[in-house]
Image (cartoon, rainbow, N blue to C red; front, side, top):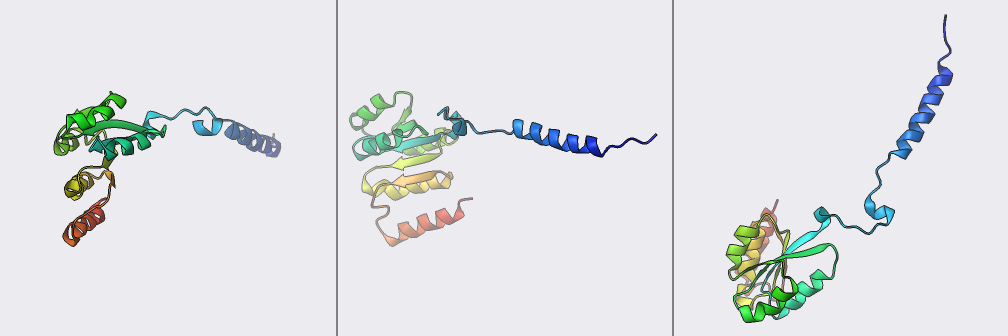
Length: 156
C-alpha cells in the first residue's frame, strides 16, 4: 500500500512557514515599548567632574542610553555639583586609581581636566581599551600626539 505524501509535504512546508513567522524574535524597540536594557547602556566615567567636565557629563547624561558611573576630580569643591547630580557614581581623587578599580564597569571616559593632563589621562584610558572624549587641546606637542596615535593603533 503506497500513500501519496506530496499533499502532506506541501502542508508541512506551509505550516512550518507559518509557525516560523510566528516565533520570529522581534527586538523590544521595534515593539515600541521604549525600554532600554542595562546591557544596551554606555557606562561613562568623568575625569574632571567640575567646570567644563560638569557640563560635558550633563550633556552625556541627557541620553537614556548613558549611565554616569564614576567621577574623578582633585578638587572636591569643583566636583560638588556633579557628585550631587550623579549620587550613584563612585568618586575618586586620582584618575589612575579610578581606572584601575572601575575598568570593568566603564565603557568610555570623558576627560575635562586642565590642559597639561589631557594626554596622560587619555593614554591611560586608551590603554585599557576605553573610548575617550577629551577636551581640546588633546596634546601639547607632536610627541604626545604620536604616542596617542600609536596607542589608538594598538587597540584591539
